[in-house]
Image 1 (cartoon, rainbow, N blue to C red):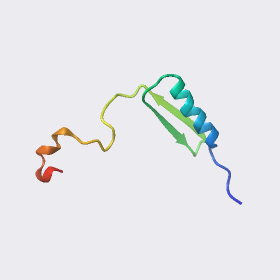
Image 2: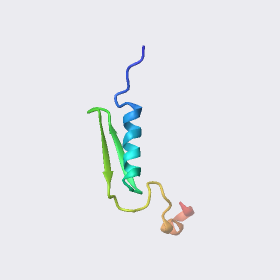
Image 3: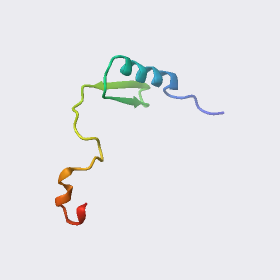
Amino acid sequence: MTKPAMIPQAETARACKAVAEAGFQRARIVLDLANQRIEIIIGESDGPAPGAANPLDRFLPNGS
């Protein structure tokens, strides 16, 4: 028998839907499994996404 989900998929879907219906374009949804809760962080800066190319990378040796 498998262990029940710590945070049910329905709860996660409900959180995502609430963010979209509230009209936020960017939000971070953090699943805190240890405490069995969902954190929604809104209003973050529109900085580059993690792993996005930096336009100054071309000045580095080997283009990396």
